[in-house]
Image (cartoon, rainbow, N blue to C red; front, side, top):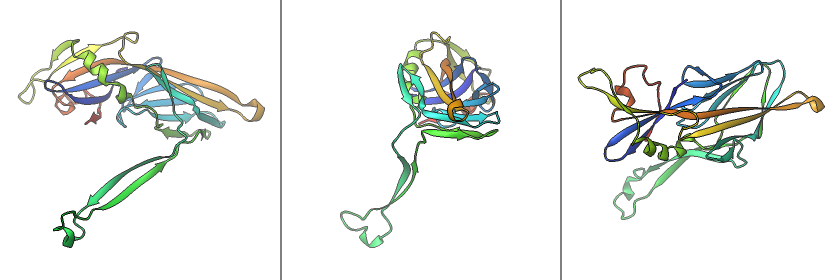
Length: 240
């Protein structure tokens, strides 16, 4: 159940890439790199690779009843800190483009004219979302990205591990160092807790799903993912 999560690009004495592999307890693997929890009520797919370490989820209601997802009572717990998946603030995400050449007559001035265009989206987090019968939702909550906790993990792996060399291909030999961790000794562990409600009125019942995750392997290499044999790394995302 080792999935290529993402790779972190950092500089030390020379250029290295860190490849992190994430495992989950009581979860199964799915393609593309996802970890899945499934029972008669829900199918929950976790995706940490697509959005650079953010927690992506696909939650499917497998029943004929309505189910509520309570994001105010759902959180990721990492490093002993619980971060709710609900944010009451409206977030603005966008880009600013500056064009100094629209007015050529002003280019010779000491302080040229700047024109800026702003394109942005307002993101509003819902406290509760409904799962209609036999339907699914996708969610990337505005919670802590796993990548913000990786720097000390990369430094820890520098003095550990087994060096591995792959057969020569395309005229050069790819080498990397591999460090493996059990769940108890992993340098980064976190839990995801989701809260649901099913039923109507006084018959409504609240239930939970909790899933532990941990980094089970780290690879360090001077080679990027494109130089590894095809299929050896499952489309990791690079952080620049």
